[in-house]
Length: 385
Ligand SMILES: NC(=O)c1ccc[n+]([C@@H]2O[C@H](COP(=O)([O-])OP(=O)(O)OC[C@H]3O[C@@H](n4cnc5c(N)ncnc54)[C@H](O)[C@@H]3O)[C@@H](O)[C@H]2O)c1
Image (tube, rainbow, N blue to C red; front, side, top):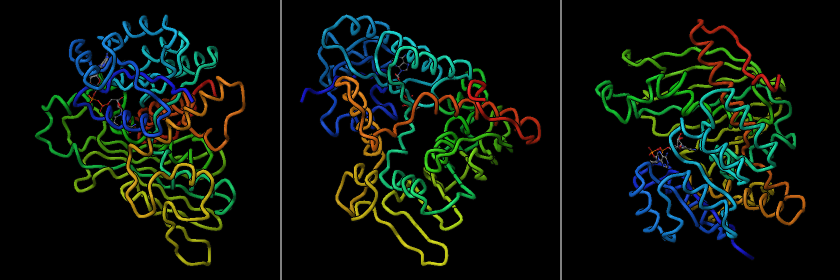
């Protein structure tokens, strides 16, 4: 089997998310790391690319050079990951889609709803895959939660409670730290800080697991560190199109919380609870039954969970393995396209441009509602109303 060719933009040396992508893309041997424009400093990007094993002709200095270099090659990349800072995602993703490449874009996909709609239209017009890296949906037990909800184990979903609360920006002395300050500056971060950075992961996961989309929301946003223009804490109530009530808390000042991504789903006939920091355990209680711990990797889980469980039961499963499941889905989608066949439905779960757009609409709805004392606002993108 020929390996697919994979490229990366951003994710340079010392970046936060670059290594997780390289580990995830490389895990199954499906993708060969073939090209990159890894750093905003051209020389540093070329040098690091070559140290990671790229051919010197494909360790590019910037993404435009990479686009030109790759588009004319017979062995051009099959997929490019965009892992640059947020404000660059739209321009790079659009350019690569239009040049006929499949794209996996980091979140948030764009900075505005209009840009998000444009990416959805571009992906549809070009017929190229535009995935968005809500990578935590790749965890095996998150896939299992979705499968349990879909097959009716919980009955009708009444309530979903999502959190993504950490404490890594809790030090007021960081107000002048350049690595933190930009995140709360509207000129660089956009209309939202904490919700756009972390809240959208939790909100997307609520939709992913329940199979329902957010219709409207009401937000209470605050800057607990008062010098910040954008929020460092948000409580969001929402309603979903299948009737579920949603509650979401996101924070960056919750000292003692580390990553803090959790999801609880309560239906008429059972409840589920999962926390990303203990991803191997899913707590399940059927109505009138006993609380049970479902272990990742145990027998008789769903096909979706089996397909995405990567290490033997009892061993820790981490974020790069969850990312690897997104790459595994994408490899199947790309191969199915090349071979002109339908893709494996269990793999057809990777987050898409439509999800990135919905997140952007929610970000703007949170900002609008938060400024207006929590009025309920429509959270759907205009093109989906
Ligand atoms: N899905 C997730 O769980 C997750 C987690 C963390 C970060 N992210 C997202 O990933 C993106 C990157 O975040 P990070 O924390 O790794 O940032 P970072 O600042 O640690 O690294 C960014 C990298 O991109 C490079 N870069 C910047 N501009 C570039 C350009 N124009 N061309 C090529 N390279 C360029 C930088 O040199 C650096 O290597 C952000 O959009 C962020 O929201 C997603």
